[in-house]
Image (cartoon, rainbow, N blue to C red):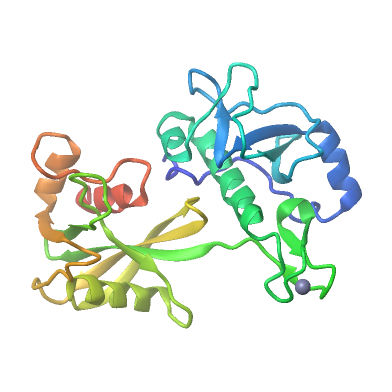
Length: 289
Ligand SMILES: [Zn+2]
């Protein structure tokens, strides 16, 4: 089965070795570097692959992505100002990359973007305000003033498809692309289980009462650094009421209608999520069962 986009990286992250400075220095010397500029990876002109380069990037922030077989792979963050010229490559926005790059390159580039973006925004210690330094190839920052350690964040988000009998509920938020209807989603709050977040969000957004919640699949989502936890939620009744703020429209779809829409046999005012989003797989996997 093809992995959900942004997952399925083939790299060995070598998490047991990357804190060894001598080992890491040897990997850096032999490394290939994926250039990233303004959160965009460098890809070949035909967009068939990302374009790693040999070293010489010591002046720029670099993170260790992992071992591709025996080949160490890093990502380098290039200064924001003007777009660097590197061969015939172009810097492509990450979402657009996910539609065209091979699955392995999408997963690796997503890892690079999420990690470099975190470093860009976490240069100072939240404990004492002093500048911090990168450690362990980018998987830790250390404050030299107060010794606090800081680790790259991954923020859990629940994304859920309510089910009632033979129907699922989809909705659209005001900031969605035109026509798109999708599963419902929201950040998990402190002190909340995944199941509790699913129930709270569905009550807040569509006043839907939910019973059993079941986990289906997850997806790393590097915008900026979320982990999408895909769930099904058994609705206790069909009635719902949109909140008008986070959700501006919602409707139930039967399995037959979902299958027809996935096969593009219905053309109207509604679109289902694209194949780079876990919502697509939540909806598809339910409809195909
Ligand atoms: Zn500090």
